[in-house]
Length: 331
Image 1 (tube, one colour):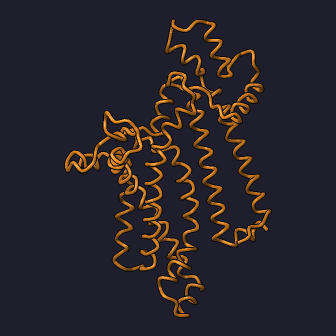
Image 2 (cartoon, rainbow, N blue to C red):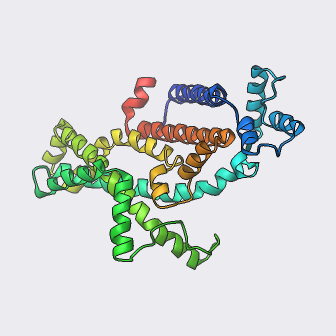
Image 3 (cartoon, rainbow, N blue to C red):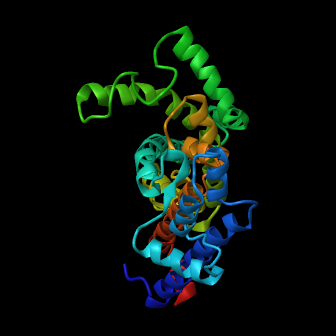
């Protein structure tokens, strides 16, 4: 299926501009806040850092007063192209990239699996409920919508109280057992699955209602289209009409929401990670904010922004493949 060059070029130009704007804002925003990371570090270690060391830190972080803001901006781009995100004050001046890479797999694994499961279950369930409109299956919609209105942390606390404390089925917190260290063994993988079950279950239950409701409403709209009536009049099997014609067109608006959800996977779910003491990016961002660790905050915001942009690019590609009208409008 050929996608017009003009469509591809316009999307590339748009996302390149968006990436430049996001990176530029990411550079200037911390510098608009009161104070700076070196000052915060000096206050935290009062009397332990010499003036020479302070100047060395300012040079290291590109905050030297003798360096113009424009030069700092150019240096920032140079560091980005070299893969250097700076050093984290709250993690012993460790490279920001290493700090983020240590927390990122936990968040992507937890929130990613939960998001994909909720999207697949909710979209398929919404398609079936919409197809069988007026049946008893409609009762699922208000029930799932009710759970989607309950805050994540409240569902998490209920899950801990019932499934962990009450029934003892799952661990209540952390990503693996205390005393264990990450390693590629069946025992450790089993620990990760057991500890991640409650957070995943909570996220799926809390977000399922939106996917079901959105897909059901789109199905009700699509089922009134002429091509659905024609397909049924030709005697096509209901399963083929449902998935090949109705659901394929109804799912298009869902893709944009799913792309955003996939992008924000990298940002994690801060409240959920706090409730379950999970070592993900969301908790790392909260800790960085409390410690005024601007380099780490800046690195996290950059990673989250890039993830959202990439997810939207993938959504555009999916739109172009599934809906020819999108390509024709750019041709």
